[in-house]
Length: 335
Image 1 (spheres, rainbow, N blue to C red):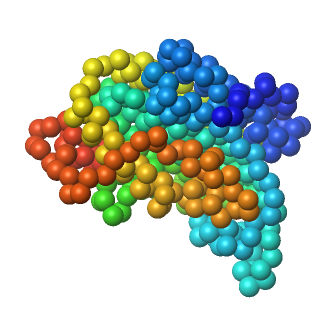
Image 2: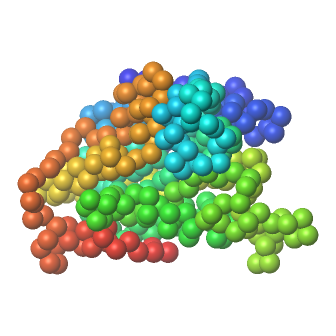
Image 3: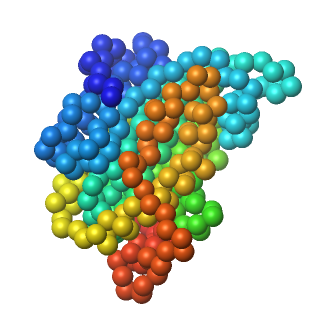
């Protein structure tokens, strides 16, 4: 297990520091804060970035990455599927230098009433852009929890432009869709990629100089567009982790549950595994980088999951399982 990193010595708020160092330092700072917040809820968690067999968390990972090297053609081809603007001639066979830094947070609670929490947005700087995603994956639906989670994300996004949360929430519902199951992995959150200065396909264009960087609605910016502004947005979303999830975990960790509920939780985890191994871009990219750290790439997978042949769980009208499944098949707006 990897231990907690020392406090970052780099000032991630200083524009004089290279962005790659600022992102790495922020990830270390956020990692420490999140681990401390989780320790306050678990009776005996190891002081580690990877938690297994805790009393509240069955498996959890709060891991940071800062990697660089040269991408082989197959990894570049995978990346260009979503970033066609990267200048590269596939026929050249050349390897391209890269750097990526971020934080990955995945929490699998023991109690089926407590939802799985997935990472806040990491940062990537290549040519250059930031990207990430954050969603909630419950086994049992509590509307109070959904509103807590989405409300915290909206509050993190709105200071940077009121169009951001609805755009990235919709993108999250699309991204975490499991086509072969015709359902989403969870109840959404935010997802974004390719966030840099150029116009973004999901957001209003950067403001013109005549508008002084503000929209017509209350002087709020339409969206961040410089590296410093987007990094501030990344930090706002990362800082939203604790208010978006810790209150939910505290509410649900001691709620009684049955073997029936545990069975449903494991079936839902099976869906989680299917998405991560078949569709998740980060997993596919990680496996194609040179010398991949397999344990880190697969850290997000739960300790236990379940599959049943033609299971009828979730089909009974009026059941809590059916209530969740209906939402997963037709995502809704929570705030």
